Image 1 (tube, rainbow, N blue to C red):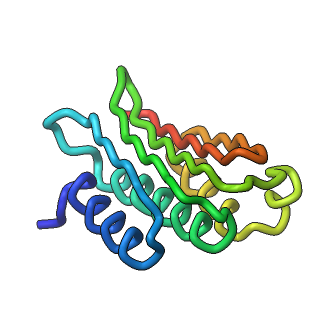
Image 2: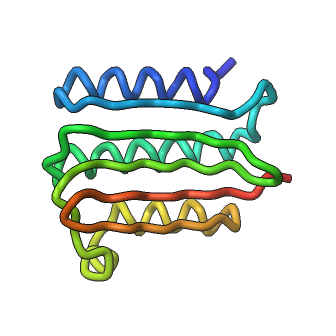
Image 3: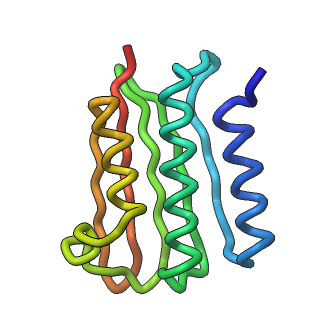
Length: 129
């Protein structure tokens, strides 16, 4: 049996904290029912890629990860306090960002990036059946 999304992300975040020294606040409000496996995998991979990008590029000291199930959808929000980037420039050459968009497109999801000199926010939302 595969671990729940929450448990798998807790492990990922613990490893990230240990490897980078970056503080991470994590909260999951998913309710008791498991998500479809393709949704769980997509959310995990998006958070994983977001953390990888933060470690490589952001210069962040703090990160926040929130998973939230709401009526008809589940979303992941990853925010950091790094120096930000221009999403329009990075969107053309960023394999990781393209991969996140692609994963969400396959599930008819939504992907948004907001970035400034004070940090970056990534929102990934997937509709639920």
